[in-house]
Length: 173
Image 1: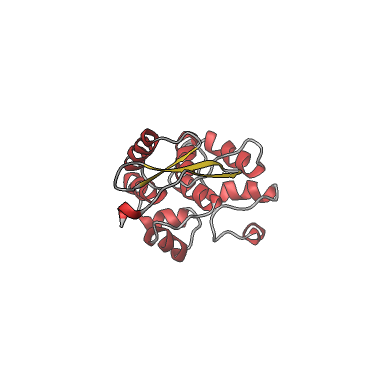
Image 2: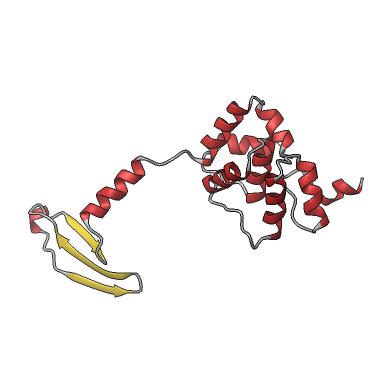
């Protein structure tokens, strides 16, 4: 029973910090405190979790609706195959690669700021130290959204292409 639980103050020192377990009330419920983590912190974090923003998937399909294009038109403009696009649509936990997210941003004609926000939804960012990112950024800043144009520049600099239907041989035909 709860009453028979005897709670001792236990310390566990490890590289994650000091852990103390203590009785939080007479019923024997335990509250863990880790390196200054308080009940107020837990409440604040819980509040943040209740107000999560749109997921990548939600943002993508909202942007498609707002664009006036069909899903088919967008995935074709992004050089994606139907199977991959279906996986993105049907699996909210699916995490597409950065080149797929960038291809979709170009297909949706997102400006640089919108693309950066879209990448963030998928847990990516444009890096000033990445050659591919600099090439994509160049075209977004100039409002050039044609995937073949962007991919040709990536190809010339021997960088990975956007989309999953784009092979380097595409430009040699």
